[in-house]
Every structure is written in C-alpha cells, then in structure tokens.
Amino acid sequence: MADVAIDLGTANTLVQIRGQGIILNEPSVVAVDRATGRLVAAGLEARRMIGRTPEGVMAVRPMRDGVIANVDQVEMMLRHFLGRVLPRGLFRARPRVLVGVPSGITELERRAVRHAVLAAGAKEVYLITEPMAAAIGVGLPVTAARASMVVAVGGGTTEIGVIALSGLVAEKSVRVAGNEMDDNIASVLRKQYSLLVGEATAEAIKLQLGSALPLEREEVMDATGRDLVTGIPASVRVRSEEVREWIQEPLRAIAAAVHGALEVTPPELASDLVDSGMVLTGGGSLLRGLDGLLSRETGLQVHRDPDPMTCVVRGAGMVLEDWPRYREVLSA
Image (cartoon, rainbow, N blue to C red; front, side):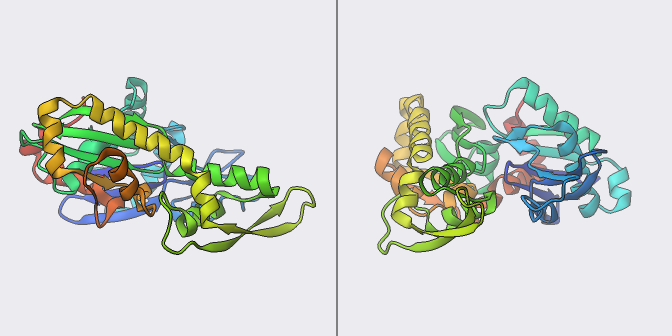
C-alpha cells in the first residue's frame, strides 16, 4: 500500500508518497464547466485561468481560510492529483492518507475533509494539525518534555502551536495570512488609485515590495490593471513603503495571535522558549522582515525554516515513516 501525506492548503496542495518524497506541489485551484460542473483543469493549469476564463468556465479556489469551501470541487481536485501521482494499480489499492488541517478546524470541517479524501480514493483518512506536522517537518523534538514553538503562516490561516510530549499545550489559529495581505493591497489600489488589479498582480506586489519592517533600500514597481474611471488598462507606480503600510492590519493580527498563544503557555514551558525560540514556516513566512517583527514583539529568537512551504507535508510524511512513534500526535 502506498501511504500518502497531503498538505491541503488554501494556496497550494502538496502530496508526498512514503519512500518517494514530495511528488506534487500545485496551486489549490480548479477550473470547472459552469453548466455541467465537470472538471476542466486543476492546479497550475487552472491557476493560469483565473481572471481569463471564457463565460462557460470558472476558475476558483475550493479551499478558503485553510478549510474546504466546496467539497465536490476539492474531491475532483484531489482525485485529479492522486490520479496523476499514483500508478493505477496503487490508486485502485486505496491508500492510507494523512492530511494536515488547521488546529482551529470545526467538527463539520473535519468531516468535510474526510469525506473529500475518501471520495477521492483513500482507504483510510487520518488528520494531523498543521502546527504539529510543521514542527515534525522542521525537526523539532515534539515527543520531548521540553517546549517547542512553531508559527505557520500560510495562505488562508496562521497556525501557532507550543508543543511538548506529543501534544499541543498552547495553540492559536487565526484566519489571517498571506491572502488577506493580497486582498488589502488590491483594496487600497482600488480605493486610492481607482485601479482594479487581479489576484496574481496583488500577490506579485506583495512578493516584490512587501515587508514587515523598513528595508535598507526601499523599492518601487509598476502595478498594472484596469482604470475604474476610464475602463482602459493603466498602471501606477507603487512604493515598498506604501505596501508595508497596507499590510499592517494582518501583520498586527498575526503578532497578536502569537502573543495569545504565549500568554496561555504554562510558565515552565514558556521558560524553555527563551532558549529555543520559535520556528517560522509556511509560504507567508517568506515576507521580508516577518521574523524580525515577531522577534521584536515577543523578545524570542525567531528562526525561519530554509524550505518553509513544505514543512507540513514533510512532517506528515515523517509520521507515515514512523507510525508507532508518532501515532499519538494525530488529531481526533
């Protein structure tokens, strides 16, 4: 049987097969026929269609804020991805699947994840919280009595966990992350410059100009979209100082969530964090200066994993490799 680990993220879906490593990393996007609901494309191909589809096709993200927004679309997307990466014989064998989910997920959302994965071809479905999976993925000693702390900033959610003895002793999950920064950028451009930009453009501005703290050398770029007054294509020059101001609200929410998790951490474990600090993971952690901002706000050392976007699926894969050792970390 081919055990499969899945990081079913708002922005990207990653799949790892036990013994083979990560074999799929695609955007969590589907393109479907409006009339029939039939899948037209999934992943990178579907993402390229966002904002460019003909009238009869819609390209959408079936994941919102880290959880399933449309079960049928997620099922189609997973069936497509698993069909691509698993040989037909193994797919028919119905693999055991371990899925990373937000720590703040509701029971209804848990059932939606299980249903979608089972319908996509799994034999058994297990869940693991994203902070726990990320902590295992970066090599933190989650089974030890000493505390470890991980902050996973994804596309739809920010997950904070303080971990000891295979459990989350303090956790915080907020549905604020990279996507909200993109939305803020697009909103300000619309209100301040009367410029309508797409999702991809807003994200590109964040990646190129975004920062949590002042840069040594501030930068500029041209943002292109549609002028809401004239209705024709237009561009405006955007400065990194402006972008930093536009994303302050989600950054404050992330910092407040980290504070919230630390405030409920037992004193003995909190003292461990003075030495070990916290580890930043997730695609949102790539924002320049985020580590410095959180270090300034908490007084703790902040380390960013070298490959932050794959931590959750790597950790889930490690659980599959050593099931007896890690079985206790699975989410109910």
